[in-house]
Image 1 (cartoon, helix red, strand yellow):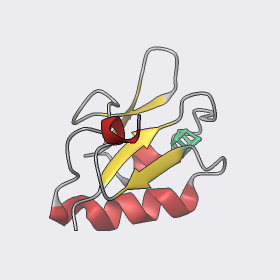
Image 2 (spheres, protein in one colour):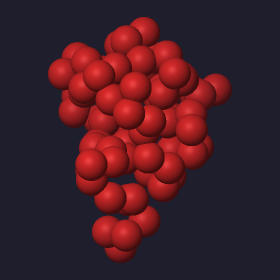
Image 3 (cartoon, protein in one colour):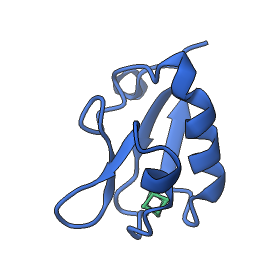
Image 4 (tube, helix red, strand yellow):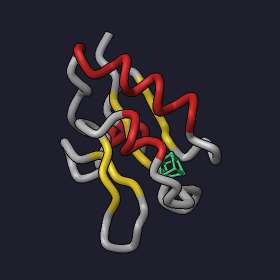
Length: 78
Ligand code: SF4
């Protein structure tokens, strides 16, 4: 099943763990907070299958649980 990810920037402390573990998915913005690169943190584009392992590693190592993952686009939760 496709996975979608988004960063809750209110919770992110900019530790850089996600970017280090999953550099193809995450980057840090000008304020040092993480975002999902593929869809500008909208949670609208599925994470490609070959990156899901990276995603799971980052999820485990985020100290503030700021990385949110779902089986559907985040826009559909509204
Ligand atoms: Fe932010 Fe979590 Fe990524 Fe650290 S691992 S930069 S707290 S989202």
